[in-house]
Image (spheres, rainbow, N blue to C red):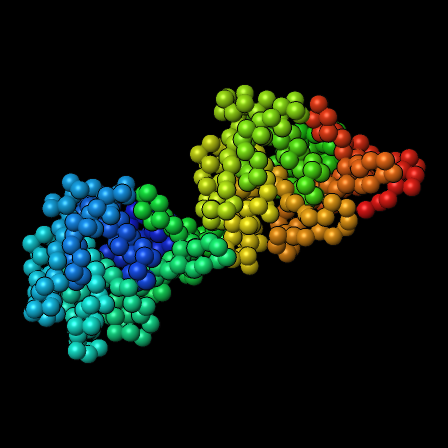
Length: 473
């Protein structure tokens, strides 16, 4: 099967979304309302292309002066003024369009493509060309003639428009691909999205994907569940046992946690979930490094909490055996969080992860309906990388049997399920641990009491004859 030559955008996530990049020599429309990021995206493609040795013609049918554009772009890291006038030429065709019409615009751009030996042309202001055309036929003719000249010269074309063109518009029918940028208000947050509405000669990951504009320009985060789909094929066919960090628990779960397994700790605030996770990370070594990926407690507070359990997290971090990452759930995107977690796991060869918490991570999702799919993909990929995961999940009720999940069927994607809760006795509250599920290992289903002391977390079996009139939950 012939593979079409690709023109890579150099934009993180976008080439993955396009399954390798744009098809070289093709034509694309980039559309979106003002402020959606079209100009940044197009210039980012252009400057990245020039950085790789290509030549770019940026033509505009707008009245806005180029110098104002340069001032705006100069705040972004990809902008390189030294490329302008050499590998990147900026040409205004506004006056030609107004005074002489679209035919002369085509002649002007054809001359510039040949003269500059351009391999990418970006035309900003397609909406103005449409307004200038007398009919849809003339709009098609304008696009067709530009496409023909560009294709003959081996030049890939990007048309920018602020119009929300529909699939049957003259512009859409003429080009090979349509990339749409948009913005959606989710509660008090504004979420940027990008999607391919049309691709010809190439596949693309369908649907809308989240993106953001940073100091480096546009960054795209393809939906994790649409890019990671074969993790299970890479699963190991043999397992080993790892200490959980709770020596009194390991004999009750078959000797320890199975390697590359996912353990979910469910319980209310204060029940011991974080202490369990810190004890788990206390077993990290240089040979098997660990990662704390959390949303609620700062690294400083975690170190203090670990020290109270007899764990020196500062020393583990200094040696490189442990990485602590704190993330804000109010400003982050869930796919970005998942990708950063996986990137850190890969870069630091992480073998133990404590994710505190799944509920916190889920709050970063704009679309709550895909949380389960994303967690399934994320946990599958971590398993495939031989990473052992402990994750927490907070329930609201301190006392009671009601369990509220951030996503239905969440327990189905984990290997081990442990329930931490409070039990009210006449004079005090006690913590208890129930082992609800252990996959691949025999376990003792006995009810366990949890004690948090200076030596860390400890569990012991509850003897019913000693409970008296205890109010069981």
